[in-house]
Image 1 (cartoon, rainbow, N blue to C red):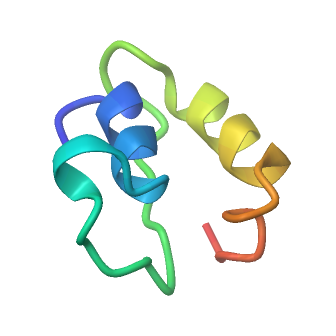
Image 2 (image 1 turned 60 degrees about the vertical axis):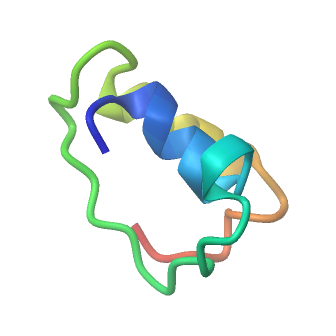
Length: 55
């Protein structure tokens, strides 16, 4: 992924990522461009579909 927003789109399986398999683990760069990695982490952990995935 090139930025935090795109990472969330991918994790939520939207748009061109709708057929991607769900991740078993997420390695997150806290300095990812545009949407900060800390904000991405907050969104992942507040999303009922994603919060169980280790980050």
